[in-house]
Length: 104
Image (cartoon, rainbow, N blue to C red; front, side):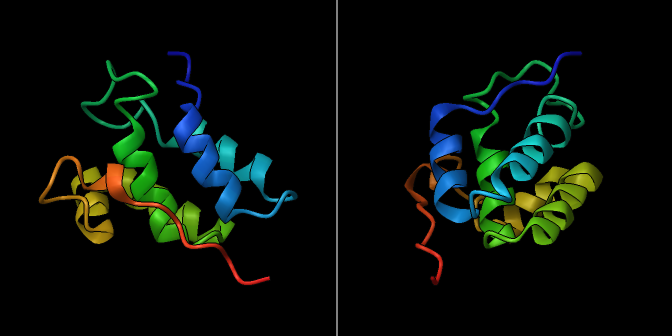
């Protein structure tokens, strides 16, 4: 199965959160490990995957290793990822989330 690319909105959030040097790694992690390869999400497109990818981004706080941990959580049970990010109770909560600008 070919990985789903990041949606434009997912990419915008990633660009705010990660340094230019970490962006390619973060994008690869989201595209290859946090997409339609997650259990029961096989048929989702890039837009339907935003909820899960935003949750991983939110928990990462702009850190690649934290992103890896968030994605590992999603791979075990993405419901836990959604709850940890605050996106589990409201299916549109992720649409209202925007990352804080990281400290310079």
